[in-house]
Picture 1 (cartoon, one colour):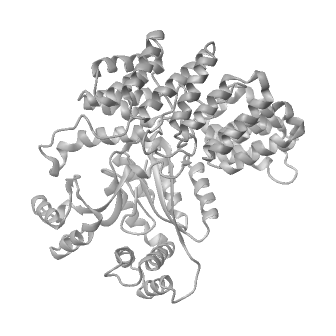
Picture 2 (tube, helix red, strand yellow):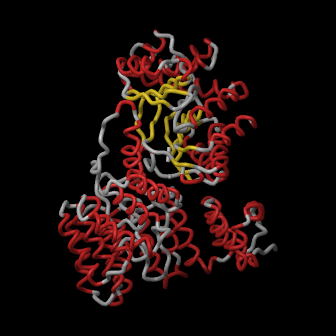
Picture 3 (cartoon, helix red, strand yellow):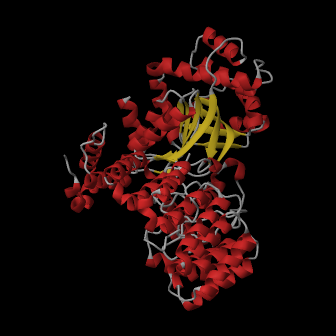
Amino acid sequence: MVTLSRLDTEFKAIVTDKDLFQKLLESGRKLAEGDQPKLDFPGSIVMANLAAEAGQTDDVIKFYRLALKLRPELAGLIVEELGQHLLQADRYDEAVKTYQEAIKDAALSDQKPNLLFRLSQALEFSGKTDEALQAIDEARNLLGNNSSPMLDFQEAWILYHAKRWDDAEKRFEGVIAKYPQATEIVKRCRFSLSNLFVQKGDMQKGEKILEDVLANEPDDPSVNNDLGYLYADQGKNLEQAEKMIRKAITAEPENAAYQDSMGWVLFKLGKYDEALKFLQMAVAKPSGTDGTIFEHLATARRNWDRPRSRLNRGARPSTTPARTFSLNRSSSNASPKSSRPTTLPLRRPSRNSPCSNQSQFDDIDFCDDAACTDRLSVEPTHAAGSVNMAGHSHWANISIKKGRIDKKRSKLFGKLSRAIIVAAQHGGADTAMNLALRYAIDKARKASMPKDNIERAIKRGCGESTGEQFEEVVYEGYGPGGVAVLCDILTENRNRTAGEIRKIFEVHGGNLGSSNCVAWMFERKGLFLIPAKHANEDTLFELAIDAGADDVKSQGEQFEVTCPIDAFQRVSEAFEKNQIATDVAELARIAANTVELDADTGRKMLKLLDALEDQDDVQSVTANFNIPDEVMAEVAAEM
């Protein structure tokens, strides 16, 4: 029997040695294989922790399941951890089933209230409000007179997330009245009530609650941050808000939400350069994955860039962009499945905030980095299966892709064929009426796909020949350095593809996220990249705008032209008619902001994109980042 328990005391040293880290993780995987694994219980726990540190969620779950098999008498503790990681992996049904099975285990009867509490959280994350409330009632009945404030708080919190505002308000107020001695729970309730009133549009009540809390705890960083943010978001008391948020940052300088608050109030004050600095720091943090942070950065970047855009010359930066309000900003109080909410983008609460779903039984926090475990997004270039990046990296990226097309032509044709099949399935064979099909055929022709292949794909899409049916899926996630990634998929087996895509993300230091965790940040547009040597700026500008383009930008060696989707064909025909050559003419997702990567992180990011592109079902990959030109040149040379 091989044991790795000795590694526990050297854990910190291990995780800082990347080579050793990966070797140990791979060894653990091998030892855990087979019907009679060679890994013992302590080793499985250590390997689960190593895998968690590496962000390898599937491995974490695998090692915990092994631990559960080896020591069933410790099921209560193991199930807690296993359930948490299942939730973080968006495997909600499995988490619910895991807790339900443990609850039925007679040997765990003394832990049943705790397990019911956890089950209520899993059901809440699954959107099963009534069942979650029922689990709380069962736990309360088992505890009898010993019912805890945390159970009552969880009940209120479930109602809050179900947007049953009046019921939630009564429950929060009931907890405050019933448990005045439970100071932390009372504070959580007050935060939640403040957030609730903001949701209902009563800003004054929301402010008043936080002001009362601040009067009693003037140095509390989370209160200073949240009230300062509330002021900033309404454009009031901005100088006071800046001081309050700076106090929070002084207490917790690495808190991503506090950095975001600082960036937002500085933006409202018109201090754009400093605002961008803080917002970019927030996005770069592993915990800075909240949709509102990206929205802030996009808004700040858009206003900062506005005078540089040809179409926006003379426009004044707006200090009050339209947006929804967000409170409780210390970290995510949303569930792991939460995508960007439509009304109140909930934020990750700090340890003092009202929404860290922490049990009264232990210190495990179910809100830990799961809401989007997941960070940005890029889309098809001149051929299916290609990668599109942002900013100056477009140009270098195109050079790399041109050098690789011949190497991957057979795989490329397969992807192009799928795109044509699906377009024909949805819109018929008439390209005059089916823009998607026309676009897919144009891409196939540019890649020199044989005419017979194109015609066969059209016939198959129209039902004139048999074959597997493809489904369109979009997967979203995050890569190294906080870059968000979006993959457009055409697959005949969704479950198989999901597993393969998740594995690629994990192997390359990323995480597959939940639906819409990054897609909302991008706008579908037509995109053209034109070599500067092939066009005069003024002529290009007039021609593009007349054809329906909405922006023309100079990017050094190229011009970037964007247009609404419905103007894509007109702009394309205008360029063709005037003999203006394009390196890229595509329907793309355009992001409002980019993530700057250093050389090392840039290489890792490119490896992730390359691996995703190599996956047969991936049609295109979208990612929003910039990396040094010299790195792009090195990669081009290697390929």
